[in-house]
Length: 254
Length: 352
Ligand SMILES: Cc1cc2nc3c(=O)[nH]c(=O)nc-3n(C[C@H](O)[C@H](O)[C@H](O)COP(=O)(O)OP(=O)(O)OC[C@H]3O[C@@H](n4cnc5c(N)ncnc54)[C@H](O)[C@@H]3O)c2cc1C
Ligand code: SF4
Ligand code: SF4
Ligand code: SF4
Image (cartoon, rainbow over all chains, first blue to last red; front, top):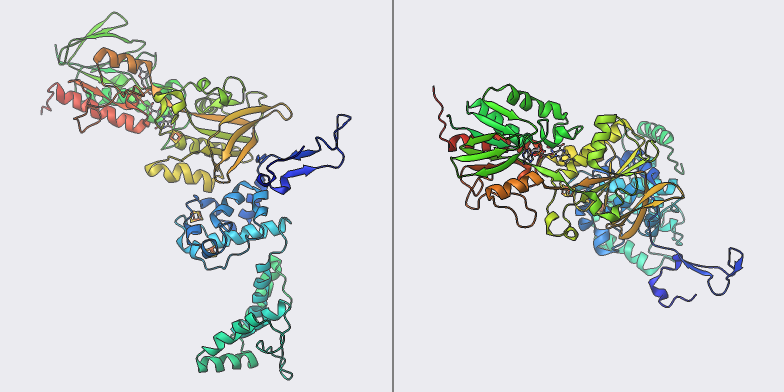
């Protein structure tokens, strides 16, 4: 069977078999094509239970779908309409997994500005709830390790080491982690991103803020990159933090 | 003979009126066509009432005993009004038991009746045993004390509430376009009771809007959801079917938030019934020439009156669900107000 308006049917709903035998009759060639319906046939109710078990997911049931969050969200407003915190909450509550998976390429794109959480009239911790949804999705193997999680881990590692982050090092280190060849000075092995094989836009990204930076602040930053001050008593905190990480099953490179 | 007041209907509204009149010392005749006072909630064994989560006996019971024990109130059970002649303050009322009552004023409190869900054939009521009404669910709780699927007696794994059955529906003609007002809140309470007693049962409410107005918003919308895990899905159920392969029902609808058709399995489906004027209300309206809404046929207050218990006929006061969907407490309060207005109308004075 031919589909005349193929553009109306998403490719994943079209099943075509080379050989198809129904009730002993070989129908290959003629009736070998099936279009799966759009009907929702069931909910995965277990999904919500998992979200509710996450400390970040406890407020998900408070949502009344007003979309204050989505209307405020920069990612939705300026980037992709498919990124919609309100909608993700609805899908997670009913466990409409295939709908969540359809958005796997955008769902991790939150920039954690927390506008949604600050404005939600129902007291939903929206940003946190979305993290809980992501966590459950990756725990259940419904989504590949989402790219933003890599940055989160990198960020956390920096904090874990020194109790604080150095903006410069975080930025340059992250660029290096992305696989770009970053030129390093031969003595201290610190990255100098505006030299070497870094692409032009990345060089600009590093140079621009440095150019407009207050000179004292620039020196302070350079000093911190060289001497790596730690937060006071950080080693004690670190031990506590390690325990918490161990209990929660968080793994870092260190 | 002292001037007396006739109250037609012994539900919450009529009881409120008779109690007020009796305690003011006014000779009152209360006519109720059933053999029991209390109206629909008592006669039909509602289980737990919104908004106080008390039993009908606790809410309405005190009014019943008060009225029955008041020597000023003459209660006539199993009796209907057959004819009314004359104008205020000289009504002559013929009753079905042969008596004639002379009344100076009348309180009409003849109430409502439930929508008949067989009129919405696509919802499968009367075809599939596991499609029941919310009234039948109340009675399952109050008479049998347990939740089960009528088809096999087993505990359902999933229960769906279908909102607005026989309400807000032009397909039925202009008679049922109003909102039932109690349905959303009662479903929240029934869902909560299911979850409290059977935490393993999943409950779904299918809605177009959730109208738990005023102070009912939290106890009957958000507590069911946040505390008890009742799930709300947006979309009006358009058809209920049965699947012989697993013996379960399917509720067909479009999930309007996801914008996809759905046919999700359910074990018990509860239709949330709308309210219509009772036969008694329509009959009395004709007898007295009371103004009715041209569509729903509920009674309407006089246009020029600021109070909604004042009818278009001098000396006739209207209270409760005969005027449209309303809750019990408001029906009682309207009855009390109508009683007081009737007392003022016949010129009763407080004497020291
Ligand atoms: C399923 C369901 C559940 C509900 N649950 C709640 C709840 O939990 N809480 C709440 O606040 N409200 C609830 N309601 C609404 C509640 O039932 C009404 O608010 C209330 O019954 C209205 O009282 P009423 O006295 O006006 O009318 P009714 O209760 O209808 O009483 C009218 C009385 O008049 C009698 N009568 C009628 N015609 C005549 C006649 N011609 N002559 C003599 N007698 C006559 C009837 O027999 C009846 O006893 C519910 C409604 C439904 C449908
Ligand atoms: S603002 Fe809050 S209540 Fe409104 S849709 Fe977003 S999470 Fe839900
Ligand atoms: S925290 Fe994330 S979801 Fe919330 S408004 Fe900001 S980008 Fe959008
Ligand atoms: S109260 Fe709720 S169920 Fe009843 S008609 Fe209104 S919206 Fe529908």
